[in-house]
Image (cartoon, rainbow over all chains, first blue to last red; front, top):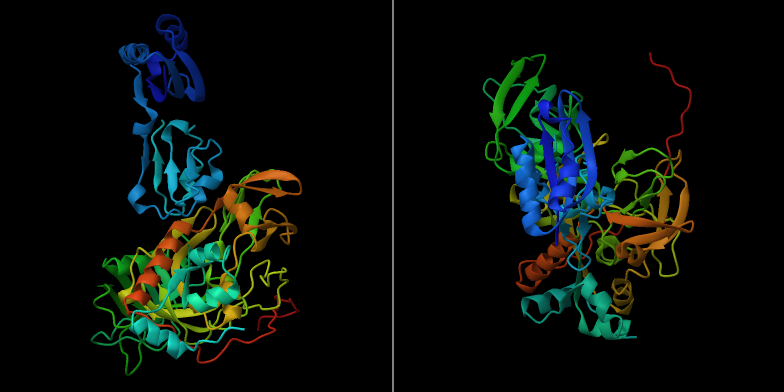
Amino acid sequence: MIKKRFVLNFPPESGDKPLSYHLVKDYDIRINILKAEVYPGKRGSLLLELQGKKENIEKGVKYLTEQQIICEPLDKRIHFQEDQCIDCGNCTAVCFAGALTMNKNTWKLEFDKNKCVVCELCIPACPLHLFEIDFR
Amino acid sequence: MTKTKTYEEINRKLKEGKAVVLTAEEVAEMAKKASPAEIAEKVDIVTTATFGAMCSSGAIINFGHADPPIRMEKIKLNGVPCYEGLAAVDSYIGATACDPDNQAYGGAHVIQDLLEGKDVVLEAWAKGTDCYPRKHILTKININTINEFTLFNPRNAYQNYNVAVNTTNKIIHTYMGTLLPNMRNATYSTSGELSPLLNDPELRTIGIGTRIFLGGTQGFVVWPGTQFNTTRPKNEFDVPVTNAATIAVIGNLKEMSTNYLRAVYYEKYGVSMFIGIGIPIPILDEDMARRVSVNNNQIETSVLDYGSPGMPRLDQVTYKELQSGYIKVKGKKIRTAPVSSLAKARKIADELKEWLMDGKFEVTKPVHLFPKNTTLNSLKETEAEND
């Protein structure tokens, strides 16, 4: 069993399919919708956590892609300029999901992208503006 | 009482490679087992450091004279306004200065750009005089074309600082970071037991002329910082429990590094600059040994509500609690986050230690000590009219 977060981007024409039903029923994947932005007739974006057997998740992602849905692992959509980070901690103040934390020994920033819920609060909270999230 | 050491004796030991230098965190650890008398015997210097946003910072720049010359009466660097009231081609660029139409780029960014060797656009205007006939100049400058480039910060390295929370039901954006509603987070800003002025609370060794680490090179303390206040309430360990003393510092920007100076922008607040400061504290006697032994359990600070007018004080907590990740304020458990970098502060304390051990740096006896019993005025408004 693995657990992994994906960002899904829907083109305007694919908004009416019961995709989550198929993921659950056909591929035995447990899904958790963490964030959804749906604009009917325009576009839609979803943050999904998929939990299941590795091969089932791979098949599920393939199925989504066949439905003209862009489906990418969340960590590929998060851009963080780590080399510029000064470990000030400002981003950890707003990260209630616990993805951004300070290591209590080194006091360096640790970023577990798989805990991110794309609340996007870190983007303005970082005084060096080192975060970008490509969700839409 | 153990014998006392002089600055000269300590510097001689440094030269002979016999001095014992520890960071303030190392000495706080040592003090768990050793008495102040033993520490005074064994340790010669303790290095302290901080790396945080210090808004009252800026740079003195001399542009050099153009031909024909101009007496600059309005000056902009990359669009950021600089002070124009200093002779013909001297200026001061404040870290927080910015063009109101471009608030995310300010004086601190101009300083950083110059430091990184980038070209910066200088535009200046003047009325034209007999000896300075020119009325306008538009050109590029960089770190090599300008003459003096001096960091001069009127207020840095606060001795302690408060914790910020927000009791309102709306998110607020402050220099203490983003404060979530209903006290869902708390932010704090000093490096605790590693913080310079907390290790010499009576300022016996930090005064005018003290040689310090500033932005990656040698700098100096030149004056008490603005808002210098020595009469804040103190706890049983002589630690002021809120922001108290400050220092004004100076150093040659041309020798500094962006590793220890960094421009920042706080959402809906403005521009500031992270400044790296390290101060070596000579262990002259048992009293100084006791001061530098202070630990995060003994250093307390006030929790203020940044969401309410007048920022009411809600509670008092220790740095041990703050660094644990949670504090309790009025019975409520709140997640904490630092807003200054302890990792960088440690790096500075270590680097300063190396400089001292390598004989590149020495301790300096202050030329003059700071005043005692100072208080602060607030701005009392009285009736006034514009002519």
